[in-house]
Image 1 (spheres, helix red, strand yellow):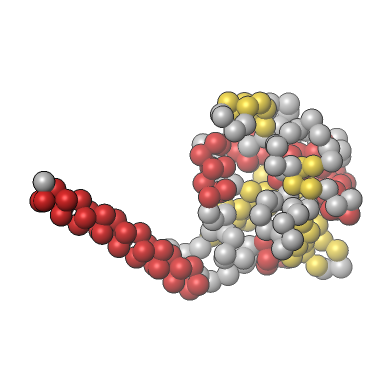
Image 2: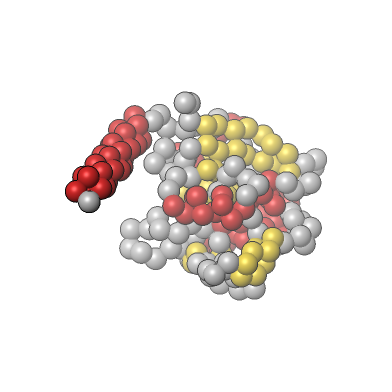
Length: 215
């Protein structure tokens, strides 16, 4: 019995040590990472940017989706050479109220939030529709709409990230997913949703550029 107790103590000590070491390593590596960049000269109004974030929420999205390397998305909005990203995201506000965000591209790509990112654009001559979609995104921000933690596609007063992009382009006459929604049945969420992979696989979009952290 004494040997078993000693063995259990040793095992627990090893687990705790590995956990602390992992946290310390991640923190040091996290601080040392270089900022991700995308050439803003390549971007246009209405481009769609995806990122793979960090942390628990990212892992849950990737687990639920299962087909996308990216967990979050937003719309590029360019005004007077200022490149902004309009997106809906939880737990990034200072006051605990998750309004739709309109932030700089560099902040969206901040290494604390992002491991990799990719940009897509409407195919062919769709500049007018893309501009309309960007304008809709700006309207969502100006109306101070909230992040939709219920992930409810039926409501328009709150939006989640892929819903924001989809509805912005739908208002411009383009259904990026052609009515093909994702179905999810979990103890937390049960219903129809739009996963990042649905937008990434849209026949209306083409890849423009990408960036990722170097290993």
